[in-house]
Length: 243
Image 1: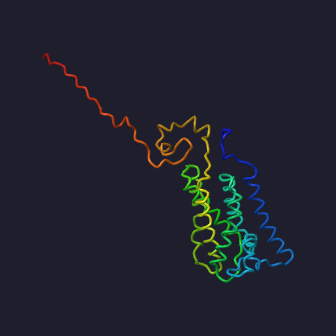
Image 2: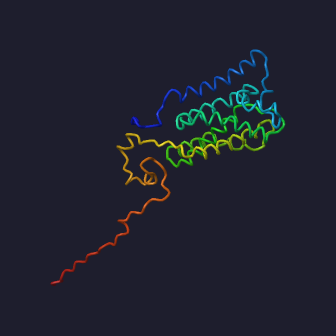
Image 3: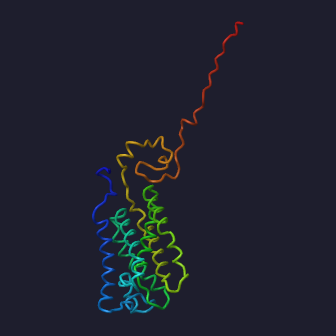
């Protein structure tokens, strides 16, 4: 149970916005299948004026059902984490993330159509990971570790190991997420403690919690206990041996 000041509080928008975004990319794909359209030409085509439209449209276009399905779950999970932990800046990260990662892809990409939501997924992956590290708050660090545990293997696809994969879009997403984690590094959530934490943990006795302040932020160096430096007085008692 959380207290009423807890900013990490669940609300319906934590899942409603990710669901809407996922439904939108599935709707676009359904329209392609139903009416026989191919929207690939609306993707990012590097270094061409016409290809710039893909900066806006490419995240919603996928080459097939397997491509779409592989992007659906990580997009939902990572965007939900974004809205839960970083709600005040969530729309900025997504909106500007689409634009900046798309522009970087347009600048560095091969002469081909780059499509799919994977660029945005890499933005979310990178942002959630680096933001937690920069925040130095134990709950956000835990989120960073969880992101690495679930999707750490994504790093390998930011390199040109498969010609069929837009590694340029993935790299652009990683760079964008890292930059946003730096830009928004001061906008760090300051969560209060859970009631059960306050009731059962004594920070003066818990070695782990000693490394964090009252707001949960990491402490670079722990002040030494001055009592440990006080001289120890030793008293000797002599008793006369009467034997």
